[in-house]
Image (cartoon, rainbow, N blue to C red; front, side, top):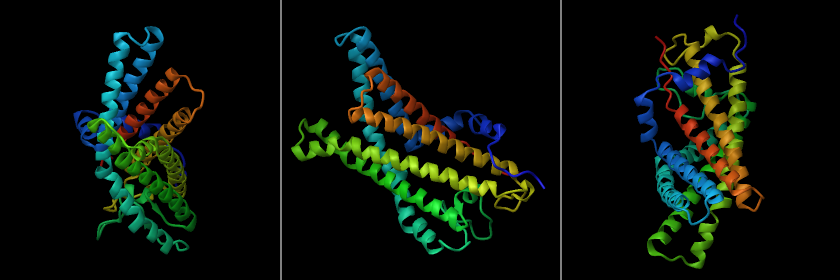
Length: 302
């Protein structure tokens, strides 16, 4: 009998960042709607930080300050577009899956020990993949955690859809037409509190997901019993998938915490502009790294 699988292993975490690194992973990052969204967010954050530093050192009229401001404005507009594309690239399908599949199955089987899969069920004649196994809930406690995870994720996704599908679209229309009505301005100004809801929802969802997957992994006392969907022994594949999901969740939690602090500045908290811009860079870095971890393909068992 092996020891209980409770924590992450450094080798598996290292695989998430280094294994298969090359043009294929970079291309996958660039092609994904979430990758483009985070990249645009990173450019805007870098330009804002450059602008604030130049403003403090050189003043408002300096060329660097002006040019950085232009880049920031362009990047924010680009992110309005990538954010809208991200809605159709994955957010709407997430909402549909949670509402029509995941939550009904969880409530239906809440007090049983039947397995409920949160990211798709196994194919006919196959066992669950490592990803499906880690995104499942079997006992009642795991299912309650999954309900919290799903409801918080649903709230976060709905807020993102309203923020980028309504508020930012109205702002884009205003940039094109050169004018916004009173009601439209209120919707545009509502973006910050709406995204605050998105950030809190994401924080709660990821926290519940970490707890749920920990309960799954800590219940395994013999790694030799871990098999893939083809019933082949594959403990390393399982640990690599666990590392991938855990690293992504931890990065997402860090990003959401930093975004909530940044939201506080928008609501009037006394945070210096340079500090807020630096925080924006941290947020962008965490977001880009999180999306990059998702480009890692766990090798199949030989």
